[in-house]
Image (cartoon, rainbow, N blue to C red; front, side):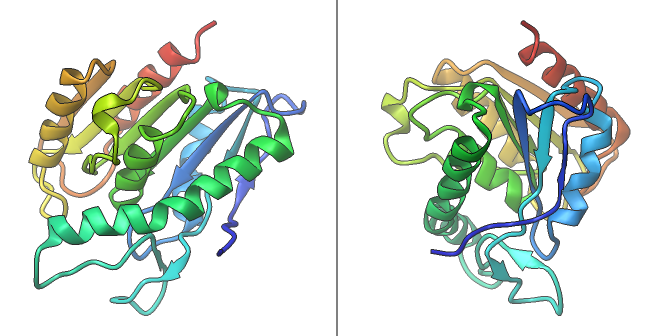
Length: 218
């Protein structure tokens, strides 16, 4: 199985990590993109190791970058997303297990955050684990429910942020995720960035930071 790797940032306090934030990039990008979120969150989690692995495959539709799974641009995109997250899940789960073993950080002290396709992976994997994470943050993504989700008990708090003018991943996908997750009893924080397309706006980042502050509080 492919081993994931990518840029990381050591804890700001200079000590051994007591938490981890795993950042999952979108289609056609790589870990260097999402690791840029780390400086915004280091003051909230000064003991956290930030790591942004590159997705396991070269992006099929671009000359550079990576993909978590292929996109069916001309067919059923929802079906291709569902198959894609299921296929990519094992490599991300293995990465998380290796991270926890190597650092001693517990799942309960781990945040899984992603943008676009990375958000789909974060939500799918983060809500399918045997132990609850500290939290899951999804920017401009969609929730593709893992098998057995209806019976899941290890459900972490979730933060959803989406621009209302997103033409890449429909804003309705996060609205649907909000409703589905709340119905399952998940603690959800949901924010719509007005006038924003497929990206992370300052208000969305601030909302995610407030969520992170809340879930990381002792």
